[in-house]
Length: 608
Image (cartoon, rainbow, N blue to C red):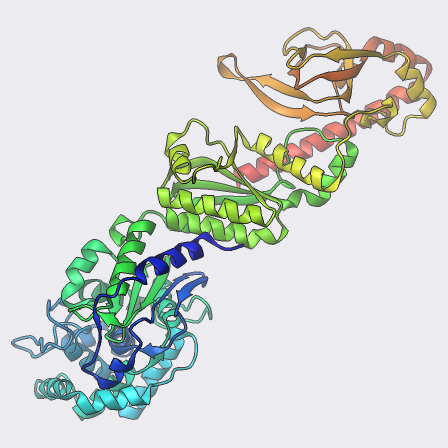
């Protein structure tokens, strides 16, 4: 199944491929060789699922995107207080290569500008520059999830032309911010900027930050938990240089850009985003990267100050029709078939606000379960809202699953405009949308019918009374004698066969053909259907135990033909043949026990 999120990113990539604003960085000669049309987008969730489009595996150098991760290593090695004495956390509002130092202490204003990054590189643990570089390599490899490689040509180009950075490094030495040889720290800084990554790598690194420092694929801790929050804070306020304020206002995620054309963005607890396109705007940020992240934030509702509950919480429970079948009473053959196949009907009980990120999570759960699914029932009863983007994603998932032969239906939506209206707006012309059922029971019955159509014929008519479960193991001659006492009756569509509360007339009904619905009264004179029955099923059997008021109403769904047996006639026959009543009562007890077990399973599922 093609996931709707993948389709969405492909559409986003196609839309912004025509954006040709900006120029490839040229102040470092090797960077000028990049193809300006390279363009990749990757989104990785905190549970490790990666969506990628375009040139997502094209490698390029990290440049300034390395800064927050080396800053994290310095925090882990030296501690927050020690690092703060050397590097501040205040936004500079200046370009990335500005000489922004505190006027009294000489400390760089933050670790995201070059001055601060050179200082944090010098703070990484290690006895000498080589040991510090091994520590940086180790950190980056853990964050990416595989070994790293430095683009030696870019490194040499940066080192040979980095005169301004050399001046900054000597100033840091002058103020005592960098200890030892500042040129050694500077060379490590040039190397970290020259580490080769792909757009997918960037998204994985961002997702590691989103996942509190644990790599979402390897499951290994790459950064101490206590380092993640300060890193994300500095990324949010300083990560986009003199565009940081506008970025936080418009996009609303901690982020970092690099002049190689990459941008990472982090949605804590949810996902990491990587975008790569070498054309840069006047502030040194990828033009396409800015546009893509702005659109992602708008469409997916990713702004951190607008966050609701994590998307995983929209799925309240997942269970199957094996645990919660419909309340109809199937024939013995159908019951056996359902016992083997009902697990292929999957319920997803949803809750809360269903925005695009929540819908994406729901769709991925359906994809995971689709290997052995025939149908999905999305119970929307506790959904408090549905965004238009979320509705579009659910609709696309329905279409994609339908092409794989899997049905997706909704339950408990009617009359709830906050869910119905977005679903209606998501439909293209000519699409009639989701099948929508009043409750889970009717939805489950529809899905069970799909299974029956696939695997077994639905008996339209029963020819013998012996075929009914009530007469299992009853000798044939006694069943034949009973059948002679029964009369054949026909009922029109919607005709009331029994009425709740009426005095028992002693009639027992065996359905020869057609289906009936059994309803119980609820508040305001309304009725709730509790089951349906078809050919081969019976109702009114409790009259065998003695006369009593009817506990439910029974209506013919269409034309129905029944054998009707009077309980008093059955009793008179049983006086001469006690085995008849004993066996029928055993069958009745067995049937009631099965119904009780089914109801207990349903209560367990609903209470979970």
